[in-house]
Amino acid sequence: MTTQDSQVVIAGVAEQVMGRGNPAPPYRRLVVDTALATLQDAKMEIGDIDGVVLCTSIPQPFEWSAAEVAEHLGIGPAWVATLPYGGKPATAVVEMARGAIKAGLATNVLVIGADNYATTLGLEGAIELLADGLDAQYEQPFGPLIPTAFAMMAMRHMKDYGTTLEQLAAIPVAARRHAALNPQAEIRDPLTVEDVVADRVITSPFTRSMVALVSTGGSQGFVVSAASSVNDADRSVEILGYGECGGFMNITQAKSLTEFEHTKRAGENAFRQAGIDRSDLDFAELYDPVAIVPIILLEDLGFCAKGEGGAFVEDGAVELGGRLPIITHGGVSAYRHPGMGGPLDCVVEAVVQLRGEAGDRQVRNAETGLVHGEGSWLANNAIVILGKPQ
Image (tube, rainbow, N blue to C red; front, top):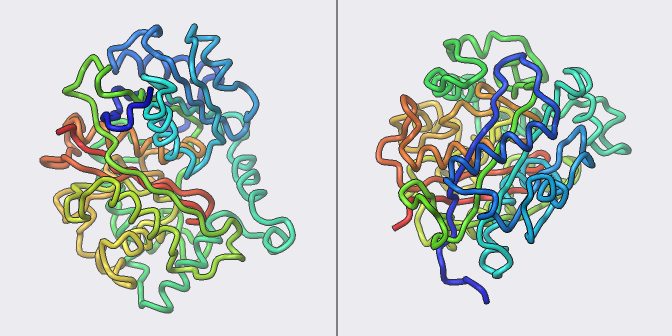
């Protein structure tokens, strides 16, 4: 029997946060501790869970499967799925779990993502692994880092639309202001536009402050449930809509460096499924690996016209109290970047915001929020829209 007409919600969330520079525990320890913390938040027991989704670790992709996690925790019989970690998949797991519930394969699905990325590989090893993701024939020989692909987008955006360094700098400044209100953020020191522009250049035009952190590790978990099965309905958050679409894999194959039709399609599908307009959103947790990405996303998702993203962020629209607050926890430039789990952190943050539990960084009267997940360099995108149950 399917449950196609029933609400599906996120009933519980949890994170394991290491803190700046502190080594992460072994991968399996992270998974187990996060699973138990997530169940506690959802007010559920092991016996309530009949589905498990595991996002695999980047440095240890075959360390554990979802079936092995279920076995270790004593979950079963259960529907299980193991998904490669990364930007879009880290958001797509929400829809995977919702789909299993609507198909009648499970009722309460435990979703876990964990990584001890830089703890395992070291900073240089983590950077080298990411660089290896570039195409071996057409990209790696030229020696780019991951930020270099995004830097090409930024340079083209600046040339075509007049976007300035100061407008790019507005993204990490907003992230840092939000992180200053988040006691778990790795970097909470004040940051100004002048500081960002004057910082050390990483790959032109990006300075260090415009590029994501490399954290030691961390984890995220949530329980996706049929609304009828939750034990704490007041703290559940409904999954309203979802959309995903890919356009390419390697940056050399992108038709444009500033405008992405597949991002637009993912957004349109999510909004149509949710049955809401963009003006209904109270915040957007956009993945922010470098400063240009949120600017392009704001344009391609229809919050401003193409070429106007820089001006949109420059006037404070994306800060708390603005028209559309983004990266309210501090994003991967200030909160943390524990591997490829940035979008999973965004899911957790969105749930916390919609529960009204974000403390000093709380978006006032938050009822609807968007979460974005990205694979590679805006090559593949997934959009989740969440809201308070009606």
